[in-house]
Length: 78
Image (cartoon, rainbow, N blue to C red; front, side, top):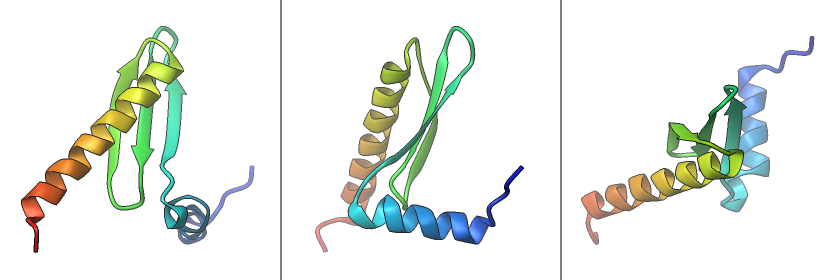
């Protein structure tokens, strides 16, 4: 089994996903439900359940957007 160093994995994620503004998803199959996790490099959400992989991924994206909007409102305009 090949194991990647955590630092190298983080560097790889930054280079291919987060530097370009992309969102990284992981969807896990639990039999009758799916669990998704999403991250944009600064914020991550998990435990987004759905009956299909697409539904779980959409919920993860929605929760990530809500968290980012709340954080931007707390910071204020300046």
